[in-house]
Amino acid sequence: METNFSKLSKTLIELRKEHKAIKPIKVEAQKFINDLMQLLFPHFTSDIYYTENDIKSKLILLKRNLKSLLILLNNNFD
Image (cartoon, rainbow, N blue to C red; front, side, top):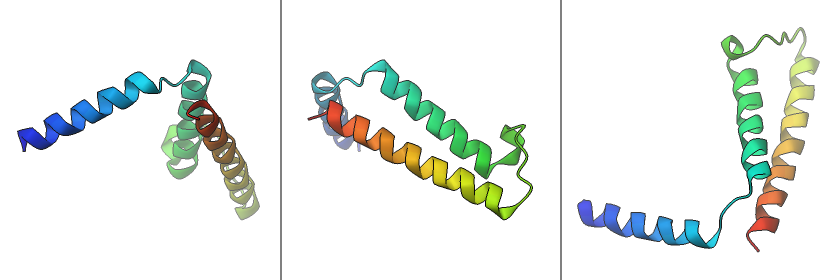
């Protein structure tokens, strides 16, 4: 098992050295995760969703934000 962790940790550190994410991407990723958590777990938010359309609208925004985030990530690693 230790050998597998050693190989994985070596690979991960090499990849991290090659591709360092810039801070705005980290901030955007954290924001996306927080927004998703707030939708999925009501005790993490003060937002109130009264209708299915409210939730659907939030899901559409999350989808848009995820696409934007993935595009940013892809552009930074090319």
